Length: 346
Image (cartoon, rainbow, N blue to C red):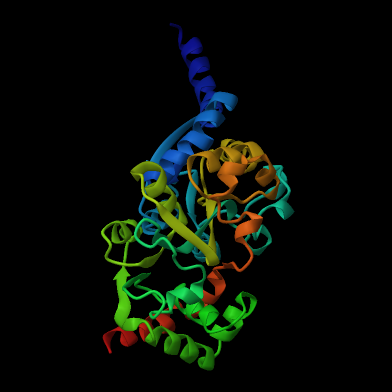
């Protein structure tokens, strides 16, 4: 091979590399049933439709690796499944990209709370609910107020070992309208009121710390009712033959979101992927594999009635629901966790 020809080939190689890079991306999520559902709903059909290769990685929500990638300009992750609170934090730090909705090609107004976050693209809606075993308790609770009624429903309750959701539910059970929960909880009097209500069931609570525990507590008969992630209850019914009932009253809704680390190497492919995953088609796909509701309002009408019946954000389930406020918890988590920990120790 002549020197001139070799030089020509070398000159061409750098120009061809980005073409390959633009045809792939690395998707990161939490593993388990959720990432499996994401793979089936988003990754596999997107790859088939677009030809873009999607590599997968897993993480446990730890932010250190994301920060380190960005700081060292060695970003190997492209799109990361995460939470609103994480995205707000990393957005303020300049670690993740602002979402370019024009490039995304989707109507921002159609997406749940999308106007509130600059660096987060809404993926799906999940909730924390109250549940019970219908086989053990045929006439079970109907409202969040029943969680606090130990005369009507004697026995242990399962609750997350955290002030989040417990304080909100305590206020709702004490008569505060869901629309005013965070307004009341922002005052010292409101916090006192919530803890006073929790006092009434404190001796009857088994505190759980992982999402896998609530279905097991119900199955073992250790509790008569428990708070839980709605997807865990759905999974126990569908895949383990349980007859657990969800109480949608007072459910605490939250968003799963996607975020893009600053300097992600495959932006064009990322936006192609997000456009597909955020479309009614992609959103409808996800609901078939896991009981999380679509973040895109246009998708709900496309979902089969039987599937809609188990999603948190269908109209029938939203009557007395509230959206967990990440701004409130970002501002008050430390002080309320300190008080909650001291309250538990009493």
